[in-house]
Image (cartoon, rainbow, N blue to C red; front, side):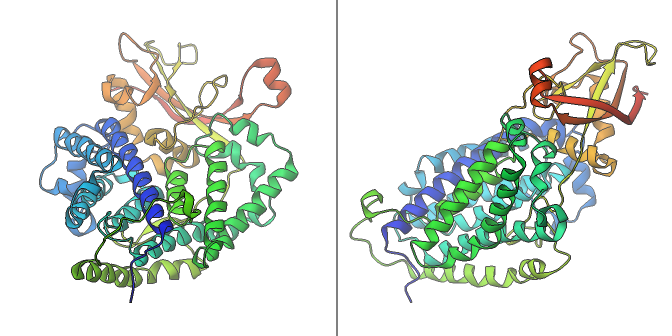
Length: 472
């Protein structure tokens, strides 16, 4: 049986997918290198050594079982970024087939090691998605062999589960998706709005209903067309790319939308005049390679049983990994949509008396809303992990139980690595004596309010999240 594609489109699909994935690997590793010290470093909020002491190897396989230090972690993160950059430049095409596969295995193994010690900071669905897709990329080969049809099919299987799972969780999770009204709230209450989110929120209500209906079609119907013959499959993939681009414009979701576009691009079949030429004079793929690809397909089929059961279950999990290697996972997004946005505002004071008359000054975060007059910025595909977790903490203090107190301690100590995660620290000379946190309700201003005040947000005090606290 011919498991390797000879069409121009298959070669192009592999090329686009590999280069796009390599670029996202670079983003992920650079983000890890720049943020880890304050989050999971030796003196971080959730230190890796303490985590490894209580979690067995089988639950969290990682290179850091051999050794952990901030310097070693930084070396792994920057090394992963360097390897990914080499893959982006096409170095795998200069290596023999086995060498290219080994090179693609390096960033996957390094990022798996990071995710498995990342704890709350790495509990996002796109971490598992990057690992699952990155593992499949190892078996796509290079210019020595034609793209394996089985591996290209497995990439479509990931894309199907990603989109279809997200569609099902919406219908099952929140009545507003069935009523087509969720987008009345989503652009305002999403985890990290972007610079255009205010404008998306102010679109007319009927257009929001059209958005929601189009989302259902794209996630519940279109995924089945990925397995249709060309050009139908290409049309389905193109529609997914357009939808993801719309989501990129409307908010910040790390590399989730970008990786979905890369997956969909692997399905596209372009006209022959736009496709790269198939290298001539190629012999058939090595027998060992055919065996490895077949074993991969069989393994994924077995591991897909539990994700498929989850898709069919009325108690569908939104984002979950069923093995510690994150090989085959289940995905979903926004099973519920908040109607009200709440934000935690963290403040400090240098005054000895932390009463209401004290001079409280707010810390500003890079991505999450704070100053009502500040327009949200675009950060995706870069992932601001602390900002995202602050959004979850505003939903429920349970999300912050493990890390918020250490975060406050580091603000009181003026920890340099922690302050680097913030946009602005109001205490340049010395750390504050007290830090507190308060919850505010945020809502987008109307057009008239925006013209009058220049503010993008209007906020109202709700409750205390953390009373004034100082170092013991």
